[in-house]
Length: 62
Image (cartoon, rainbow, N blue to C red; front, side, top):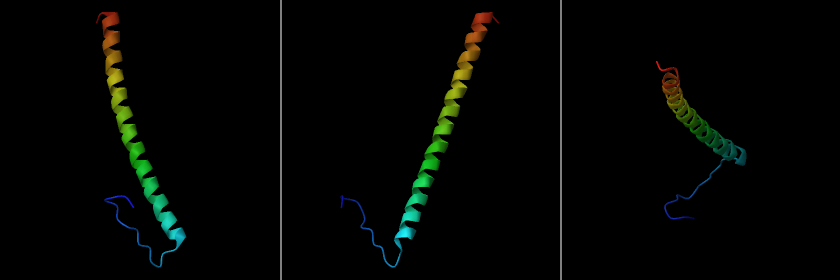
């Protein structure tokens, strides 16, 4: 066991239950990561749209 880790104590819990809970936690983490990435990419898209608008304004002279 690594320093700072807490020991896992399993008592009267089936392996299927432990596996289901672990999979649920992993799925939650994946969902949170995906949502964060979508927000980051949305922000980046906004920046690119503004840069494109500025570029087009310079090209057309407006």
